[in-house]
Image (cartoon, rainbow, N blue to C red; front, side, top):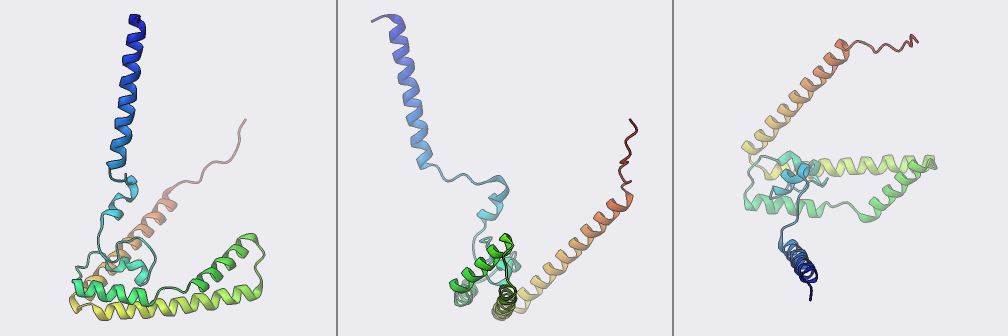
Length: 175
């Protein structure tokens, strides 16, 4: 066997061992999180799932310390008020018709009725969840809500300032 063949054989073996080692370690490694969503996925407990279920996706409860009993009660409320699959399919079909531009007046009216029903149900869930919370927890929620509204107003004012101070672009073409 020539020296060239031996070196090639050793190199090929090293590459194969390295490839198998990487493949094996990848199977044992935890799933890689997307950088933008890493914070969302690290949270635990109700309200930290990132979905849109009940109580405005349960995001209104972020930052509020819930007891195990409260978590169980809120979970039970959410389970009892899950949207009906048939209704969701109907809304999806109406939405698809709207996208395709083939929506009828009956479908528009039906969608409006379904949205109103969902709004009423959502408000009912919200009231049930608030009933589970202590007065201090409700106060925390209201304080966070006021804070978010203040931040939104500040952002709105900043956007208006930028718009009013930005000179209009010169669209004339002096060639």
